[in-house]
Image (cartoon, helix red, strand yellow):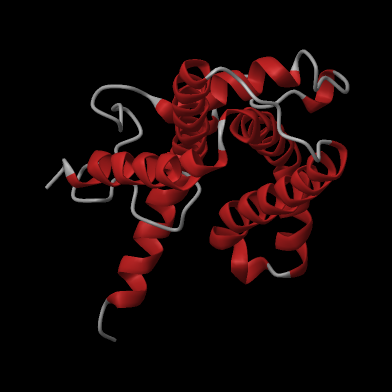
Length: 200
C-alpha cells in the first residue's frame, strides 16, 4: 500500500496537465511564471502569518501552517493571474509543432511545481509522522525515489537568499531543519491524538 501515495501524486500531475493543455503554450508559459511566483511568495511569507494566527488561536496550532500556506498561494495566484490577464490580452501564435511541444512542456512543468509544493506542504499537515500506509516518510523520496518536497525546499531557500532576499534574518529554512522540525511536530500530534483516542 506504500505505492498509494506516489500514485496520488502522479494523478495530481496528470490532472493538472489535463486541465492546462487546452490553454495553449502562451497561457501555460504565463501560468508557470504565476504559479512559481505565487508559491515562492507563499513559502516565504506563510510563517509570520501562521505565527500570528496561532497566537490568536493556539488550539489551531497543528492546522494553521498548511492552511495559511495554501490560502496565501491561492491569493497570490489569483492576484498574479488577474494582473497578467489584464496586461496580456492577446495570445501569441506559434508554429503548430512549437505550440504542441511547448504546450505540453509548460503544462507538465506547472504540474510538477504543484506536486513539489503539495509534497512540501504535507509535512505540515496534522497527520502521523509517517502516513499513507508508509508511503509518506520524511526520510524517503515520496515520488518513486525522487524528492519533490526537498526540491521545492531547496529552490525556495536559494530564492530567499537571492531574488527574494530581504535581510539575513528572513532566509527560508537557513539551517535545513524544515523536514526534521515538522516530522517531530507530526509525531507530537500523533502522540496527542493517541492519548485523546484512548478510552477514559
